[in-house]
Length: 320
Image (cartoon, rainbow, N blue to C red; front, side, top):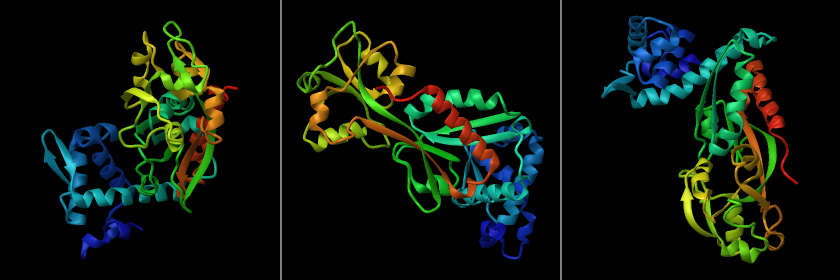
């Protein structure tokens, strides 16, 4: 496997000169964009990191990183090597992992891809729960956008949380929870829309993620030729509150988000006659987590996923 990482660039060099420590150093420099920051994260002297990086440069025959302002950026060759390096590190970890896993002794890093709803609803609670049981936890959260298989295959993230997870023979999915969209509004400024006519006559604020499709709810309505009067669009759910507060605007959001993050506002089910005219499940939202097959039997990864599922149970079931 190591030969697959560097063989094309090595020529007569011995590919066995690349070990797990060198791989970790390479990936850390890439993630930090700075030799000094990588040295602090690895608890190494900056000169030692520079020396090791120069050794790897000689091995692969590429500068790997070049200066760009105050930071360093990866070369095209380094960009191609990073996913392979992460896969190799996962393989080494699996090779040396024992059958047991002791959270109190474990120092873990975990990268989760999630958009703002999943992030704000679950991940702060997940971090508090997991970090309290581990020796150390470094959690990185990145946007999932429109999820792809490559995010998991190339180890850009360890776990992906999405209502539309990617599919593949090497991708494992598991349902996290079911939810339903509700109408949310400032109860001091308006009443709940009691009918489809009242709902469609109202002015709406909605979420349109920059790198994702419109909400499934809106896509279902558009399929019927029904369009909400959207007067404000924001890039994430956390942007809704300032537009709802003190106005007559309506937002349609997952019920869990209302109960956990937007409780200051009133909530009501979508009008019954609107749902009767729409396809079954128009107001439904099912959330999944997905991971790559290579981490299926990793005890640390399995433990982290179990902690996330425990948080989901704490957040509660969808409203009736």
